[in-house]
Length: 140
Image 1: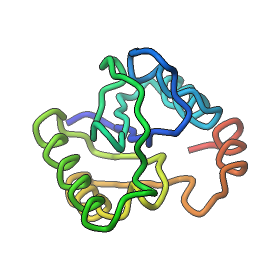
Image 2: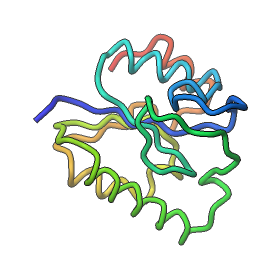
Image 3: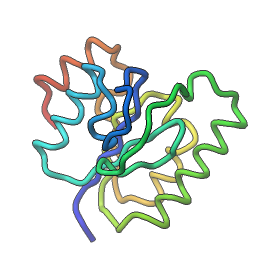
Image 4: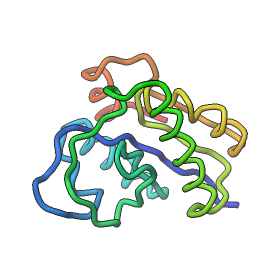
């Protein structure tokens, strides 16, 4: 069983042309989160409102979809899809660290708590500027 895995939510600001998922999301927050994770060296996946669970190397196209604009049933369906993708695509890990807002976590948290020995949401409750500061200077 591997050590830890990161999950990071998608963001609105995206490049216009198809690109690896790690490069298509352009917001300051996402770049800081990606840099944090890549410094750690642990595997990671993106929680995409359109594609579900996306490996950072997977080439995707830009899209205009967010969980913040989805109804409850659509968010539940999205979470169930992500759970299925995790079961199909992912190895076993001891710990999951989630860099994602409440809408991206709300229907996944129970699954994540059962699937992993430990689930952490280190920036839970922080506003965007505080999250960016944490990603620049925080410690695990």
